[in-house]
Amino acid sequence: MARLQNTQQPQQHPLGQVRAQHGWSLTDLVNLLNERLGAGPPTKKIWAWENRAVVPGEDVQRALAAELGVPVERLHTEPWPTWLLLATSNNMAQLQAHEACTDVPGQGELPTMSDWPASSTGLEGTDWGNCRAGGTPNWSSAAPSTELRTDRPHPARLYDLYLGGKDNFPADRAAARELLEVAPTLPVTAQQNRLFLARAVRYLARAGVRQFLDIGTGIPTVNNTHEVAQAEAPDARVVYVDNDPIVLAHARALLRSEPSGRTAYIQADLREPTAILADPMVRQVLDFDQPVALMLIAVLHFLQDDADPYGIVASLMDALPSGSFLALSHVTPDYAPAQWKQIVELYREGGMSAQARTRVEIDGFLQGLELVPPGLQVVSRWRPDPSSLTAATDADISCYGAIARKP
Image 1 (cartoon, helix red, strand yellow):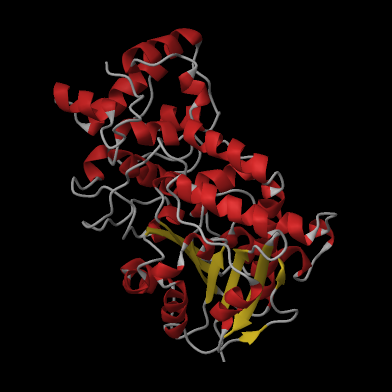
Image 2 (cartoon, rainbow, N blue to C red):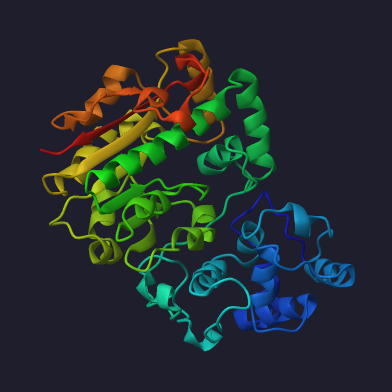
C-alpha cells in the first residue's frame, strides 16, 4: 500500500487513494484496520488503542504497519487521532464524530455504519444533544472540508506544543525551535494565557453567565471552557468554534457535557462572523435573548488589520444582548518590541497570519463596553489566584487580558 507521507501534496491522502484504487468503502477500511488490531466491533479497537486502553501485540502492530506501508514506529509517534485523520481524509471527521457519541471503549454499542449519511464529511450542524444519551447525532448535509496541512506549521499546534502537547508535526517542531530561539519564554506566555482563561470563565460563571461562545478554541487541554464553567454552574452551555481540522479531530473532548448543560462544536472561521451567528447549532444551543460570554482568547492576534478584526468583534458583540460579556487576550509588543517583531515575522514566514498589538490597540476592541476591574492587564495580573502566581516578568508574558460587559 502507498505510504502516508505526502508532504508535497497534503490534499492527496495516500490511504484514501488506495481505498479508491481498490474500491473500498469506509466500512471496508474500518474492517481492514480492525482485522489488524484484533476482532471487535468496528472502530472500537482503534479508539481503544488511541486512548491507550489497549496496545496490540507486536505481531499485530507489524501487520498493520505493513498494510499501511509505514514503519511500526510511526504508529506510536504520530499524534492520535491526527494520524488517522491524515490517513482517511474527510471521512475521518465521520469516524471522530460518530465515536464522539460513544463512551470509552467497552461502554455501550456503536451505531452501525449504515447510520452515516454519505454526504456528511464534517461535524458542522451535528446535534450533539443525543451524544449525552448515547444516541446517534443528527447530521447536516452541508459541512466544511477538513484539509489537514502537515507540511507547514499551524498556530493551534504551536500553541499546544508550547503547553507541552503532542499533537504536532515536524513542520511545527521546526518552527517552534526557531521561535523559541528568539523567545524562549513563549511557553510561559501560553501557560499564563491558559490560566487567565480559567479565571475569566470562573468569574463569568460566578457572575451568572450560563452561555459561552468560544471562538478559536484550539486543541483541547486541561480546564477547557465548559469544564471550568460547568464546575461552577452545571447547566452552563458552551459552543466551541474553530476552523482547524486537528481541533475537529479532538472535538469529542469538548463534548463531554454535564447532563444539565450542553456543549457543541462547529467548524467555522472567526473572519466570517455572520456565518457563525447564523449557524443552526449556535442558535439551537445558545439563547440570544439571554447574556452570552464571547470568548476570544489568544485568537485576535492571528487577524491582521486588513482582516478588519475590530469590525469582526463589533459584529459579534452587536448580535449579543445587553448584559453579555467579551473576554479576550492578545499578545503585545509593549514590553519587548524587538523580540515580538521577530516573532511576528517568523509566524508570517511560516504562512501564518500574525499581528501583535499595543495596549492602546487592544483597548480598541473594548470600546463601548464596561471594563470589569482590574481592566486591561497583563494576564498574570488579572485577578490572580495562588495557582497563577509567577516570577515571570511582564516582558516574559507579553499578553494582555480583559473582560468587559455590554451595557
